Every structure is written in structure tokens, then in C-alpha cells.
Length: 276
Image (cartoon, rainbow, N blue to C red; front, side):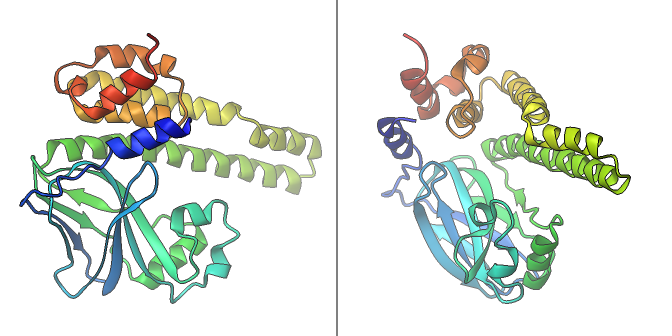
């Protein structure tokens, strides 16, 4: 993506109303994690927008401004139980769990619309930090963070994120299934079949099939919510983050109307991707 467009996207996102007297609060529910650091991240360029350490019973991040934008919420604590060296060889570990040896990171993308609600609650996993770190090492599920809010935009955004989570789960399950087939073929001494399975794993076919299912689910959701600015953002996210050609979503883009076309996400797509 051209640098000019990247700068434009980063600038268009997360322009908080810095002079507003309104306050937006993110509450963190957990009975098993005593203290942690919270960062709000610009999902486009990774800039840290807010950072604060929380502890005690009332773990709340208060932002002295209104927000109408997506943010990535990161929850960090000192890595105490499983050393970084034990999990560093895991593929893409640093991208998801943090590159610094001293910190472990949970993260979640949410949409904040302070005009709809100024209260957002994130329910952290009902596990201790030791249990969460061990789950990562064992490659078991651990990081489900639930969002509770009355914001219509935030809840629709959560539904879209659920579609992406299903996509990631299907990828992981399919790879695990192929690996089980590979191990079984090797154990049976069927090395010709093993080569075929290895070729399948290395290929893109199975991944593309799952991704196409994901795109169909996204398109269906956009059609069902074609008046929401969240659908416009998801279209932009597909084009920017997932490198989807605009042509694949041209029909979905044309169905957008009302509030879905009265926002910076729609304008960014129109100015940068729609053929004049």
C-alpha cells in the first residue's frame, strides 16, 4: 500500500475529540489477575494512543474524550511463569503475544462509539496469569475476552470479529487435521501418501477455500447491515488489512446507504479504491 495512503488511513482513524469534556470508560472484569498494564493501539499503524497501569478491585481506564473508532486493546503483565524463550519458536508468536521478553500480552479489537455508550466492559479469561501463559505454551484456547456494552456499533463490530475468529479457528482446525493425517501416513509407512499430504499443506488451496467462505460470510453481513458505518469500516479493513481487491467487494460497497456512506471509512474507500 502506498505510504501516502497509509498516512491518510492512520490520520483518518482515531481522531479523538480531545477538547470534549465527555469521558469514556473501559472496565476490566477479572477475579484472578491482580494487576496489568493497558494500552489502546491504533489498528492501522500500531501507535500507542493511551497507556495506563491498573490494579485493585476497580480496574477502569478513563479517557477524557469522546471516541468513535476501532481500537486494539492490549492487556500486558510481567511474564513470570513461562519464559519467553519457551514459546518464542511458536510461529508468529511475537506478532500476537508481544516481542518483549518481559511482557505477556492479551489483545482484542473493539469499536468505541462514545455517542452511543460511554461504558465498555471487557471480561478477561477466568484464569490466572500462570494458567494463561501455560495455555499458550500448550497451544490451547485461553484468550476469549468478552465485551459488554449498550453501543449498537460496538456490538455489530463484535459480530464481525466473530466471523474473523471463526475463520482463524477453521484454519487452525484444518491444519491440525492435515497434520494428523500426515502423522498417520508416516506411522503406517505410506510415504507416497505422506508426500501428497505435505504438498497439500504447503499449497494454498485449502487456505483459499476457507478464506472464500470467510469472504462470503463478510459480504452477507454487510448486505444485512448496509446502513451501518461499521460495515463501511469492515470493507476498508478487508481491503487494507487482508489485501482483498476492491473488485471483490464492489457489489457490497454499492449496497451501502444512509449512515454507512456518511463516514470517513466510506470516503477513504471512495477516494482511494473506486475507479473514477
